Image (tube, rainbow, N blue to C red; front, side, top):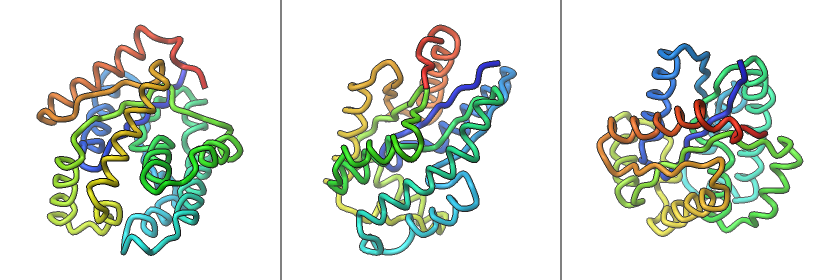
Length: 219
């Protein structure tokens, strides 16, 4: 069986985690060998960096350090998790990947996107997902949802949620731009509806990719 790498991207509060869980369960029910993972995270080292990057005050990290730490977590993730799983014929479904770095550190922080691409080429051999699902949602709606969830569950991962709405609008614009620039490996999913509707739409895109568009697989 040929493996595949799928990423789920979107603004905070767009429902990525729920979509990832739904995809994993649905694909396993169809007989696929599926591995769920996330960024930053996916390895013990990546999870440790996640705790440092997503918690605390926004000024805890210089943007350049933030970019390098995100990249370091990705190097571990790709080398230890993504590539071995895909090589073994598994479908990897990741909650965020490099598209988030372009959106958050690039469009959001104002870091040079050329530098981000250069790091991606040199550090992970320019590995991009076979399919990226972009969950598109009004940032104000998503931000409100995410802040409520973090407060209700007492999760200390709200560093980016503390930023102004304009920051999150730039994030959304970046994801839309990324999808438009590489339509062959992106699918835009309307995330404004009920969770089950959004999850069904995301699954339909994945099934279309796996069944009808093998040419889209091209690492």
